[in-house]
Length: 278
Image 1 (cartoon, rainbow, N blue to C red):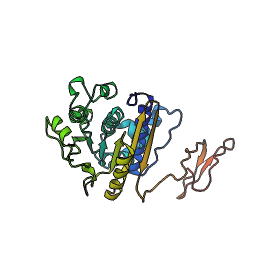
Image 2 (image 1 turned 90 degrees about the horizontal axis):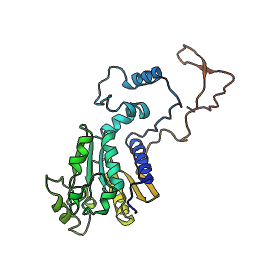
Image 3 (image 1 turned 120 degrees about the vertical axis):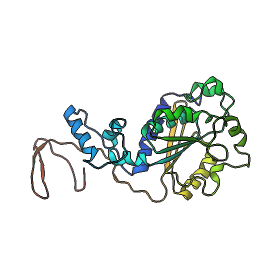
Image 4 (image 1 turned 180 degrees about the horizontal axis):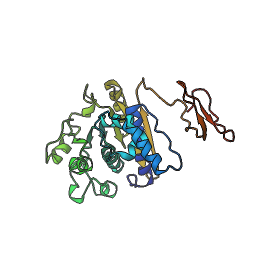
């Protein structure tokens, strides 16, 4: 079953979350030590809170993400506007994780009629949804996951659906022979556009539209045990970790108190760093 919600879907979801965080913030999530004590975790969280500076992060809700990705990445997620095209089994999982991650706005679109086969892979669909657009009930089922995220379903004309527009959305889709997102300016204002299980020809057109609008594109697909992720961040993208190597770890013997502090590691454990390393 090419739409089976199996291990590949879970792998795609994990990859999507990392990619979107990097795309929105231009950061590389740090790798944590194998073991950390409770006091170390509390200390790290205090550092992440950044003192008395107020910001819109719900620290109780996003405490794990703050610890793993850092405050800057979470703030970027909290200001990101994401358009997701394709609510297949993979798309349903990605939309769920985007809502839980805390993006500012999540717009979804898939005017394809839901089929019985879709029920085996998409948690967004129920038996009574068969025959309506896949996105017809998306808002009702995604919005309760995170009250901080504004969720909208877009119809075949790219406009937000009114309640009960599931059937109309199917009729409007493709009525003019093209996709609404191909119109000039249709996807302006989105931080990231996510395409799930989109065929190559429309995906190429979407990539051109995303570049023209300044949005980053993340495309993913899943077919049984196989799958893939493609990322197009445009012609200009800042990478803060050019090597991609994991951070080095070493035991510190002494840290000086001078203006330019010097950290000395124990002789039995060389740090192995070069100039500019971390």
